[in-house]
Image 1 (cartoon, one colour):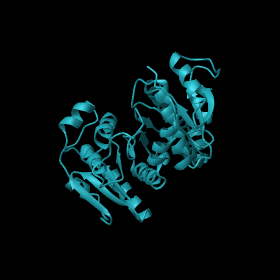
Image 2: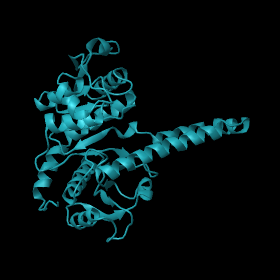
Image 3: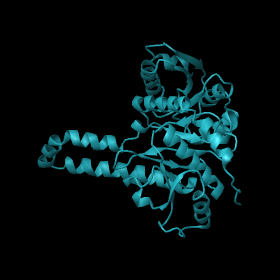
Image 4: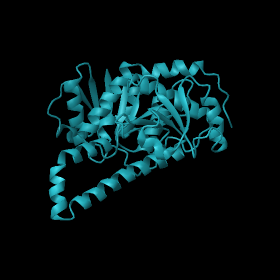
Length: 333
């Protein structure tokens, strides 16, 4: 399998990208990786070129650039050339830790949509107290959505959870302001009715306060609410860890206590950490396109590459396309 990676995307690129790629190559013998970016900067960290090739470009898209304009004007950027590798079938999937909006635009207009999918969904996996994690979609690819879109998100998320995360009969919940069937806005009420008849294990409405308890394997919502939820969870996790650190370093007594539970604290940090879950897949595109976290380390890049490999091996895109064809849905205005 072949994966193209934007080597210049992310806060710590290209170092962590190159290191993660080399680790993946060492572990996955059928893998070939194409790193797209400044060749001189890449080779500074590349100590093993086995099954790794480089496409050189000096152009890149910064994190604060307007996505549509950047993709249109910078056709030779590392992100755009990466997507082009997939479009022209020289790569089976692509990964970037760079500008999220630009990756969505490149995914839509360069890689292209999955047949039958109206809008893509950004889908990170977030940690839960039971260790399973849950898939959230949409986390911000589209601010607006209709009931038809939410059902498609649910189907795509369910297929991914079963094929890649190996969850049998994954549960799907609709994010809402209450758990009662009749709760919510016009959008969630319409979506509830359609989800009840979709080929998924739909468990009804769920509330945001229950997400980290693992109330559902797949959580469906529009991109506006999803992005707020994602950032609220990330912010809360960072705040809790900050408060814990302040408390445990506030006196000699607490420092001694911290030393005694050092291993437990490390386990707690790992439970709240994103690298083990890989990146946020952009479901609804004709090939796997994955957004790795902007502050990814090499371990996060490695797990994102493994995630892409699982999607390719398990034919997630093809299964989504076949399943969507079976749905008899009327798109809502």
